[in-house]
Amino acid sequence: MAAKKNKKIVQSEKCIGCGVCVSVCPINTKLEKKEDFEPEKAELAIRVVNGKAVIEEEFCIRCGACARICPVESLSVVELESKAEATAA
Image (cartoon, helix red, strand yellow):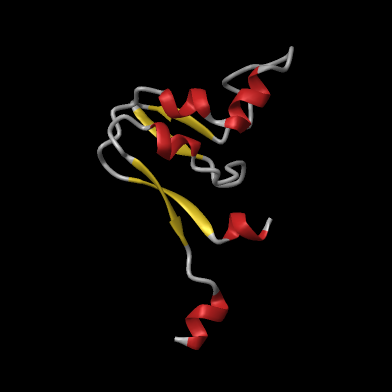
């Protein structure tokens, strides 16, 4: 879990809401396979809302699949500075 806390998915204004990121997300894919899957109620890691991809930090595992597939390079994975690194600087 430590790796998750040191990364974040960041989105630019370039998002066109195509939904490709939603379809490749491993969290979303796992949920979609469930028999009782309801997209509106599911705890998806990423979804398209009002024409833009929205990342749910609570469920996102920061694997970067969405960033790698984004056709307009709207999403990117960034490394966050840890508290130890910040105090050492």
